[in-house]
Length: 282
Ligand code: MN
Ligand code: MN
Image 1 (cartoon, rainbow, N blue to C red):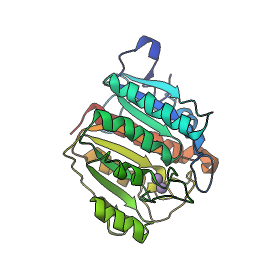
Image 2 (image 1 turned 90 degrees about the vertical axis):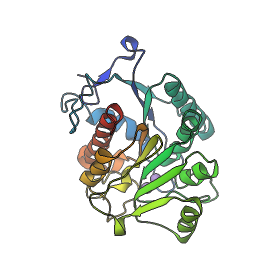
Image 3 (image 1 turned 180 degrees about the vertical axis):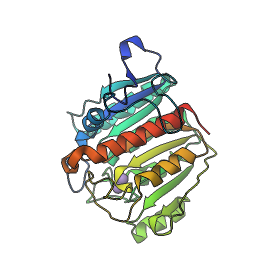
Image 4 (image 1 turned 60 degrees about the vertical axis):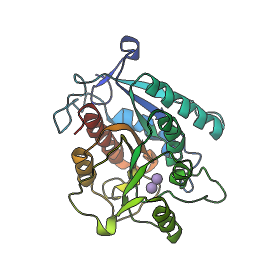
């Protein structure tokens, strides 16, 4: 039984895969705690087919209805610039095959190189960003590539036509000004509607920072921000989304804080249900 609920197939026998898992074990741009580099291994370990089946809640069988492979991890032993370049290249190679990347971080800084690859294949592209934080800092402690900055870079480079941020609840005045200027829609926790129905006109990329979830549901993250989404609320948004999902990243899982691997299991659940929507859009 392989990982990802038994859905992951051997690459050697499936060169024409449809969905590719890619791990980016990188946490050098984390501003507070390290540990997110352990994310890909933690998700693989928890997602074993000995524990889970390949069916999503909406009835998609990831073992039968698609071809999912695990391409392993990016080599992140070099400097950050090299790790980012390798990440961008690997994502571009998956897209060049007409397949859909599912990227497991790593801290949120990896989303910028991933989106650079996406923007060349999809224009216009919409982004659905789950996070406690807008990640719109111009720089953090002088670093413009910090995990607090990817969406500032994405807007600056014009990589997205529309950005919707769901679950945000730690927002500075500067973030609000930048969001307003760039037409970013913030669905803040303080006034979120439940259920939340979203529709995207363009192909949509989903970037899921695990700290969007309440720490009660996802303690295994570096930045605990209470008052967040339940796992069920996040799944409801993904399951009901109208539009075509063309990529996903799940970032900021920090296994060093994840007693009982509960956050890794939540990350896998998000991956699984999103993969189902990639296979069968609405
Ligand atoms: Mn983030
Ligand atoms: Mn965050």
